[in-house]
Length: 415
Ligand SMILES: *[C@@H]1O[C@H](CO)[C@@H](O)[C@H](O)[C@H]1NC(C)=O
Ligand SMILES: *[C@@H]1O[C@H](CO)[C@@H](O)[C@H](O)[C@H]1NC(C)=O
Image (cartoon, rainbow, N blue to C red; front, side, top):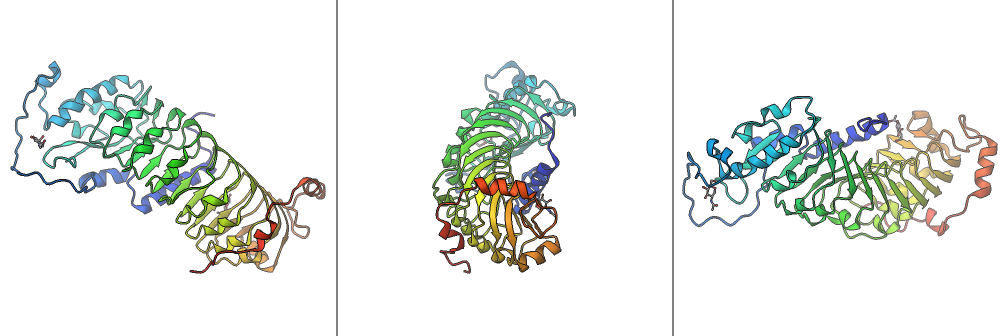
């Protein structure tokens, strides 16, 4: 499969996430230029300089720098400093089908395609490269090392849909202002870039559609991030058993190899999540009743895993949920009528499981096209598994521990 090929169902996630992201007001792509017009750097409370001379800087000092800067005049010293870094990166680019780097010439870095300048937070009269938006540029380079980590005033780095490779330098931890990092849909590999763990200003991390592998450090989930997209990598790890509180609103772990059960202990931390996408992993075990703590969830998708057991009644606590999917698991029992009563449901996908019963309220949802229970074991409905297939499954299926919890709603659903 070519690296850039994105199966259509993943596109849906991708598009949804992007739409959501835009709705969130987080700058991606187009948003960047907008924020560049205003102010890229957040207003940090900075010490006010003792004297604020009205500086006009027609002639920057000419320090003893390499030859090239002697003939180029930079609007600010900070641009002179990063100029050779940008030029070095340019020389590493092996493919540039859109001719982007043709514009990366001369001393006016702020006019280079993909580069945006702003006053850095530590000196409002200086000018620096504050934002990079390479989204969709299709550039190839063997590494971002020595580039991304050497742009000290960077607040946003968006480089989705390029062919960048290598690992992410631990030195990015030293970028004090970086708050959005999007390197999705590239060819990065290696372990999770744990440098981001120390970056307390980072609110948006999107590394989906790469080749990262290994485990995901649990501390990541408690970073002050709003959005975390890890989907479509090769992460192979269990979810942590317990988490402190998380700020994350959008959590997408789809298309990795997350294994083991969904620990009941993480749902309290996830209670403010709006979107949880666990699609296409290798999660096993029974659903914990604590799933009912996801009170803010609008989308919850645990499709194509190996989850088993019944649906806990506490699911009905997800009052805001519009899209709920357990498609392609090994769930069985009755589809709880309480779940079919949830007011905001637009799509409840339980197809390709082993449910045996649906009550009258759920049948109304089937008629409306909201509930999909195809390919289950419901005797009087069409498009079900064969009797043999169902008998085989039930001969080998195990009950869940704590069966009592499936009919028990131990916390109040209504506020
Ligand atoms: C702020 O930036 C301006 C322009 O680069 C520079 O001349 C000035 O020395 C800087 N001030 C401080 C306190 O660094
Ligand atoms: C409902 O959700 C399932 C699983 O996520 C998806 O495959 C299906 O296309 C959705 N149906 C509609 C009508 O949106």
